[in-house]
Length: 422
Image (tube, rainbow, N blue to C red; front, side, top):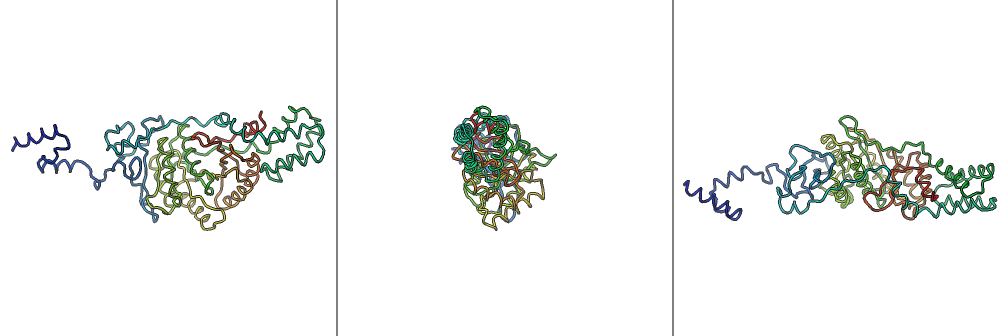
């Protein structure tokens, strides 16, 4: 018998897995007992997404919520790793891809190390200047004319209104500027430009608090709720914001509470895996978004992350039921953590329609900041002033392109300088 076992062992060593059939039954059963199978509680490589999945709670009535950990998270990034007992070895920082199956190893995605967010608007100023220079040039041309009569001032006011500034702010700026030009007698282009710059910055109000409140509260993470209508770039803004925070040295968890659009959770997971963030999502399409948001915050508390970013379903501001659901999401989250930011994402190219959307969202949730996307396109810079006047909350972030690092903190002075070409 011993002789037979030795021969079998030699066959296994030489032949590898192909000789498994020759191993005596007792050896096979012991090997099966020692290796976790699909039902033993071990994670299956490749199950539930690129990096496998892990149960993250019952998910409530909406179905089971799974937590996806990006493949190779922490292996190519200096961001702090989010270690947790029970996470499969393949998902642990420094784990070798060879430890998993070929399918899992093939799906490993390199983890980026994003640049810090500071100074992004200065670096992206050229894009903003290209899209807004016509607006600034038209104003400077009118103000530098030899004669500034009533007709000229009306044309200046019309230029500001067509730039989506709004009638009230445009009229106020023109009246103030008209008084200044009359008192100082300014006609030199440089002097006129300085007056216009000062007035535009004053209208934008640099004293507003534009900081993002993303620092944890003791053992509780900061929670950022992102809202808006479909097509504004809301989910993309979530991914870019997570990337910016990780670039600043934070740890981030993303909650995919947009359960109505099938591609939204996948889109968010793609952003996350690039920077080593984690995603809590539902494995049931159309699940209760409040349940997913609740699980995301709970998992953020368990993991000890700095910030949880919750993406919500894009909804028309005219749909009462969907807007009520948005209020429910915030109430459910508030049971376990403070909602530090409610960021409303607006497409800057929609102009006055964007202002109407903003009014309705502000009635349902306490919007704390605006994210203006697509400002590098056909959008007009006056929307910044218009939306701030409408809601009384600051523009905190602006999108200036489709690149991963094209979301920048809003800086009034740099923005005005880009418009005026200064």
